[in-house]
Length: 330
Image 1 (cartoon, rainbow, N blue to C red):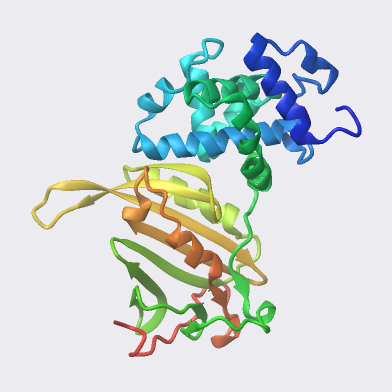
Image 2 (cartoon, rainbow, N blue to C red; image 1 turned 90 degrees about the vertical axis):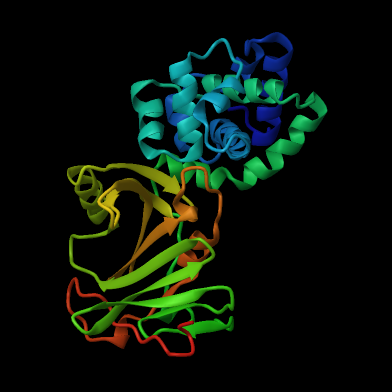
């Protein structure tokens, strides 16, 4: 990459050249267009282009209510096959398997292909050349998430109580957990063997179940996530790893039986976070777990949760006890 030139300027020049001429011949002077490792470098234009494509794809996905065929139709690039388009769309949406496949198997997470995708989106949406630079501002702010997605990394989130000594925000004290205060949700205790071991927070038609566990050496969220994935598949459902706002999660379709004996498929999202000697697990159900949902409430609540492991005696793998006040359970 040319020294002394900002990433945004390089991306702008690449996009402008491709939209005007359909090629990136001049772009060779600025960056190695086929360097597949560039997508793993925060300072690389490839990450900025990927982030900009994500911003556009996610907006289109929401407009089309999760209909992948209609989203593909809005990517007119003839240079990309339908398979490549679907793979890149899924990668932009956060499908970890698609990210890995696009990067490692198909080799399409390089700047040449990503510029082709982004320019196709810009042309398809009728974005004027002068307005294109405005897209790069939110994309730059999205770079960190884009890179963590490529690396399948964690997004940060829930904190240990020892890291929140200066916290002054209103909070609902549940003993082993503290969650942000509010009046727009209802709490339901999760009980096991006579003790409260979790809480389900319900707002509208979305529910988030929270459970914190004393950590077991060698069994972090990566390991447990893999076990959940296999369990869902063995039970007759389907599951995929996705890069979501809370890090790498499992999105599953779980077959359930109604009282009348008929079956239905329940959408579930499993979230997880490794803390210092504890693990917090979240389970999203209802409207917020639907494939087309862009509702961030459950993720914000999960990320704002504070874990108090000292509330109950330490025992590896055992849920940290909770205490749900009557006033908090509505």
